[in-house]
Each structure stands twice: as C-alpha cells, then as structure tokens.
Length: 218
Image 1 (cartoon, rainbow, N blue to C red):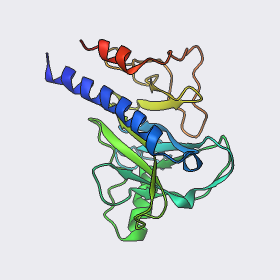
Image 2 (image 1 turned 90 degrees about the vertical axis):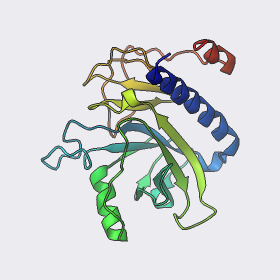
Image 3 (image 1 turned 180 degrees about the vertical axis):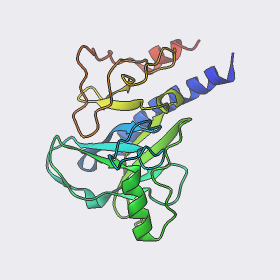
C-alpha cells in the first residue's frame, strides 16, 4: 500500500471524525456561520487586483445558514496548527448570504494588527481550518466549524465546497479537471465565490454510516 494512499485514508477518516466531533462540541446558536468554500491554490486573479498571487488570491467563503443576521466582527479564522488568527472578519451577513475573504484581505488585516503578513496560508498539500466565534484573545472563544481539505483539492483553481442542506463537501474542478480516485471525486462544477454553492446535474450522495465508510478501505 503506497504512502499516498495511506495519507488519503487518514485525511478521509479525519474529515469524518472532525464532523462527528463538531456535532458534540458546537453550540447550535453559534453554528449558523459556516465555512462554505475554499480555494487553496489559486491560478487566477480571484481578488481582481490585476495580478495573480499565490498568497493574495487564496480565498475562503463563509455562509450564514440562519436563523438571523450575524455580525462577522465576532468571528475569526485560524489554521489548526497556528496560534494567531489568519483574519478577523467584518461586516453584516444576512441569512442565506455568503461572504468571501481573500488572502489579500488577510494580509491587510495582519498588517493592521502588527502581525506577519502571511495571508490565509492555505497549504496546497492539505490543511485544516478552524472558524471561531469570539475574540482571538478570549479563552472562551468557541470553535463553530472546521474543515480538513485533502491534497487534490489544493491544486490550481480547484475548490472544496459545502453543499447545503445536505452538508456534503464536493470537489469543484471545472477549471482544472480531476481524474484521480481520491474522494471527493471531481464533479465538473466550477468554484463560485460569493454565490450559493450549486451545480447543475450534481446529485448529492446518500449519507453513509461510519461502518460503511470503513469498508471502502478494507
């Protein structure tokens, strides 16, 4: 069994375990704001500043799944392996709306805070992002969402997107088709920053038990 295959198994199981853990840890009142889409390896000028930048054009999209409007000043994003937030959000997000934050937004915020201007620092080989409700210096800040994305999602202009209400993560590879066997498989969908995650013809997969998932790797 190859190391890359073993790594795929670890990442796949980790995504499931994180989701199962969050069901027990997340306060429903805090869980309205969710990570909805991520591009870790940009090959386009996503932030429309006139140049393509591996740091500035990374982006993370969040969505307000309800039931009321949310002040994003109470939320921040952090790499699971880091101590400092990558960005504290801002603005009002109404029910059903999405908001996109680019690496260039993170750089601007970090400079204002006197932090190293690393941007979102999304690792192309796979990474884990954490979304918190509260102030970064508050020990009572609450983890409201987390995402582990696999390495094949961190390739030129591919995104990993959450489709609601099924809460299913899919690979949007319309700009850079994926023909491999890792999960999630390619869909032909394109990234949709700032828009609802929809893809014509995509049929959400049925939910499977933990035992059913494990049989894939026996």
